[in-house]
Length: 345
Image (tube, rainbow, N blue to C red; front, side, top):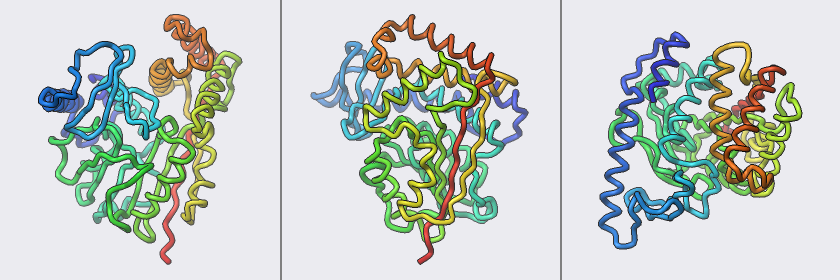
């Protein structure tokens, strides 16, 4: 995870981070060992070095996971998330955070700087390995941050004093009382929620947000990129078809505003930012690296739509060709960010 320090140098960042990526990696490994020890005490568990395709009951964190082709995935049938949840994927998400922060010039869009400085209660919905949660917690020490995710992929023991985590599926239940949070942040769940999940999650998020509080959702449009060529178009529309086959919204980024209105939120504001894909500057190159790795991670489900992509080498060559085309055409990914408020009455 050395890319954290290299990215920070690249972008000339001057933040006050006290937890570097080595810390995060070591924490994750220690937690994995703790879980393994707990599993060895359970007669129904499977060892971590079990066969390539297996299912393990992770009793120490309350969810199931499975191994497929050497990668670890969630195994809970109620969770639609299709990406792995192992260390390699966590590394990608950490790097993705820094790229987005540089490209978007901020960790959030809602007008909350003064409130965060004074001290508010924040929920990071679908926090993953919690890069955003940790950085926000350190940047705004007077506020309290709660991360929630269906997978226990965040550091639980070593963290800022104002950061807490809970494991739960946001599409089923958010285990907090009504009107708990002043601000809710959620991004990049387009590969993790079905249409029903989005509706249920927004109902829960509406419930736990305080009247007058802000919610902010952010997603990329992975179907229609700017300046797409035919090679990249096939990749993007295969992703779209794959999502639709799983009852997952293929253009949820473009629906954020309407979904928030339907859920009862008001005063919505939408911002669309084109993100360079493999062109113009280092940020564009780094975004492509992230993009490429994410697509390689979803090859198994993409191959269900395009059978020749069952061959990893064929698929990787195709994704590489997409990168070259994006560079030539100066393709952009449109990033949608929408914030709104819960009515005061």
